[in-house]
Image (cartoon, rainbow, N blue to C red; front, side):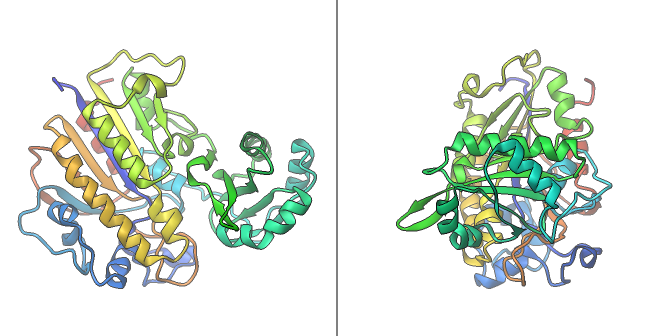
Length: 398
């Protein structure tokens, strides 16, 4: 790699490791601990790479042993921002603190907002307009959706405006267009909603089934620059894998590719590391790369959250962590002395506690490089310590 310095950030979406001190303010119980409870439910996890990195040293996790010879630096991060959602967590990882929580809509969206959405999209009407589990609401309203052709609009405990429809009946492009319209209405009305999410589904074997690879998130644009912007503006590559470009509303990104699964995200990360990823095909237009000595690769692995956390599937969650560990066995040999690998999470989503929503949790952080000095970093305040570390690693002089 010559002297190219790279920072690789891998977010295991929702793999929190214990309730934050202010968990009750967010409606969560003290027992929330996604990693610990998933380990316990599965009678231990088989994650030798994460174990070697020191993950087991952060707490009592069944099956993840403590090690006296860790190969990485390990610690726990407590969130500064007021939130427990993907956008807030990732923005803070990139150095942006959200002092004000995003708006949530436990009673559904206000009539004037829905009326404006119906009028501007010409969709005829909407179904639901309540907080709901996505898988449950499409099963419940699929028949009515087919009868009326109205989109299913719903929210959750998070700050999200979600639109679901059967793309065999209404084109995917229409869904994306309606999402962009919703994003515009929310921004113009200062509703302070973090994300509009396109939730396409199809009827497969007689059952409404969400199509993960076609999901899109339309985030509020970050109000300030992040560490990603700093390096993009300096001419370096910032490669977003998974829903990273959506979370940052393309801000601070130079190359981006969506994924349909963790497996795909991990394989693309390997390609980005070994130089086989076709960067020309995923580069944004009008982006000029003038600094080839520094690079950020930012990967979000969403299955833990979307497929397993929200669906209270602790078994599936455990399998997903083990799958990530299998891939880490291939990733670690690709991390040289000029590379810094960061493994972390953005919030919790404990599948073993009541409810299907995110949980306000601290998160683990692991730092690995070929010649890194292993150590216990303890508990640090702020996910933004990752942004500081990345900036320091790549060189603060911009």
